[in-house]
Image 1 (cartoon, rainbow, N blue to C red):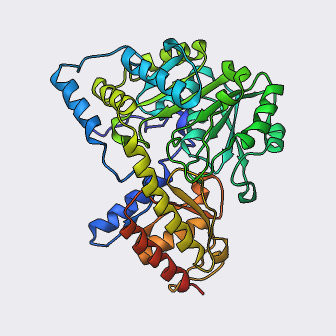
Image 2 (image 1 turned 180 degrees about the horizontal axis):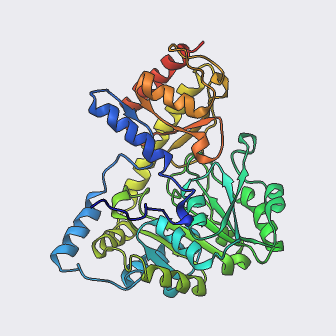
Image 3 (image 1 turned 135 degrees about the horizontal axis):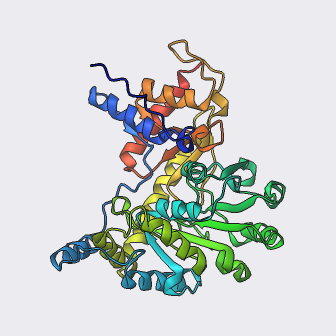
Length: 406
């Protein structure tokens, strides 16, 4: 008998959301690799370093000690205390333990916050270029993303004038990420000050700040976080962080945040009906990361800076491309405006940054992510969280690809 069941229809809340462009490009690159192609993938947003040994050993010890059961819903007391100490020491912020939450990655922190606070029609201001999960999470939670383009001339940073113009009575949140994925741009205290002054005038607007790349900043740039700069905003700021980038722990899936008690409690309700507690073993590892030696973090940051300097220099030497020097993270966000409109050897026209990324992948086996995936074109993102040898080969191929355009 033929199945006459109705066809599958996804929920409307995800109807406009697709698989991440980054994952799509990675999938295409891996498919080419399986065909025997020597593809260099510069799309992954994770350190190429391994998790430090003392962190892995802490996880092994936790397993052997039988610490494999459910923990407190949003983090063990020991890990929350370590996070509290971290906020005090590094950021000048003092949170009570019940003002701290631990989740299965910082992405879940963001998701919990949006699900706990957004009603249909609520607006969330997101500067672009931006990590694409921000807008998708807002949409899933029933909110409306308000994307504000941030020009390269402004350092890819949101200006006070643009923020003021974007705020409406429906604005619930502003989301800021420093240092930024994808641009590597970071906000100094002077950059934040005008934005915080705007928020002081709009008391209904809350601020979510993603500090995930806090430990990866270069030169004399001084990292700061808004809640420390303007304590009077403390009761409407959620400060988000995690161990993924600084400690090369992407797969361990531990993120955390500090914020007002009422918000943290509402987020716990969401988490209780989704994942419940984060992995007990991962929490033990995160505890070791935050309380153990920090020297390796600085050493790896120095390696990232060497790679950054090389990639920026190599890209700026290629006719048609230009690249701003990022203050942090491990990404470059380079303009490809100078190659738009040119023709590839196969006769195809490079009309967009997505075309350029596709051309680099198919013609020269280099996988990058187009800026349009992050809400700002025509740019492309390179993750330099890979070996210098790979970066050198990739930049040579990109130069050859650009030279072949007419």
